[in-house]
Length: 225
Image (cartoon, rainbow, N blue to C red; front, top):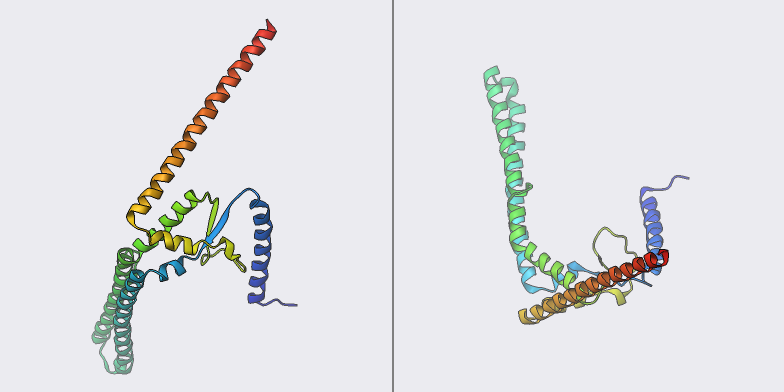
């Protein structure tokens, strides 16, 4: 029996999800796990919606410009094919050069708009990335404050066929973002104090371990004598 591509993919996802559940059941005895829907959080920030709207408007304009260029290129090619039997060899080469030159202009325009470091990349970095960083930093702070071991992103490539809302910290992240700068600074200061406390405890444990090892060594030497 031949299994369809969709069925095969779904089967793999179910297997992966089952494995994830087994691992999570064991891990939750020792680890604290949560997940966040970043798209949900971003959509709840009014200024982010404005930034995304501006980005979409600019993107639509660039696409329209490219569509016009492709339409003009298509017209140039059709006219050339219709007139080619009547043209001299020199005129044929000239028209071919014109078409190639215009194709290069289109490629250049595409790279300018949507290239690796094109206008879309720069505008997204200017308008959208700050909000994404804001959410990311909020998740990092909450994870440290609430002692989370792992926080997953709900809309990522990780298979999440079922989620228990008890582990959803999306609202928590949103409330954190909406706090005043003073409250955020206070929470970050609390994190630093906690980290300093843990560092001190670690140093004390290491020193205690060294003393115990030194005492043990002296005791062993005493017994030998």
